[in-house]
Each structure stands twice: as structure tokens, then as C-alpha cells.
Image (cartoon, rainbow, N blue to C red; front, side):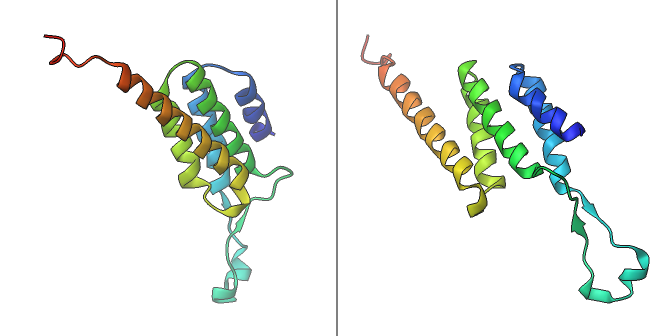
Length: 130
């Protein structure tokens, strides 16, 4: 249940520091695995650790929270932080299962890079103004 509560908090908070903490908490769940009982380990290489089973997909919550946090950062004009979060989505969720979120991250990064180029183009050249 704490996983769902963290995700629900991610949907409502606008505090960048809290969003980063929530992303970490949600992503930690995705890394957890359950060790098989000791009696099963005797079967050798045929027995592997299994991911924690939950009613919701922790990775889906993690990527959705990361996308939302990046959007909040963009609105707060924290563009470097937003870019880092969108790149995090591309790095951590690169499989086809997450294509919807990866496409969102790519589009947002392209928009961020386009806006950064426009800002740079409008800056006056100090050497020319003399």
C-alpha cells in the first residue's frame, strides 16, 4: 500500500525535492526481488529470484511519476532538472513496454532543446555591440 500512496502523492505535489524523493521510493520497489526458499535452492540454476508481485506494476508507477515530475520541473522553469528526468525515463524504461512514456520523454526533450536554441539565438553578441 505505501507504493500506491507514494504514487498518489506524486500526482498532487509540486515540490521538486519531494517529487525526487517519491521517484526514488517508487523505483526502489521495482528493484526488489523475493529469494526462493532454501529447500528450492538445492535445485541449482533452475531456481531464480522472482520480482515482488503486486496488484499494480511498480515500473508503470515509477515511469508515470517521473514523467509528471519532469513536467512540474518544466512549469517551474527548472529546465536542467526536467531534462535529467526525461533522460532518466529514456535510460531506465527503454523497452517496448514503455514506448508510450518514452515517446512523451522524447517529445518533451525535443521541445526543451528547441526552446533552449531559441533563447540562445536571441542573445546579443557582446563583440558585435561594441
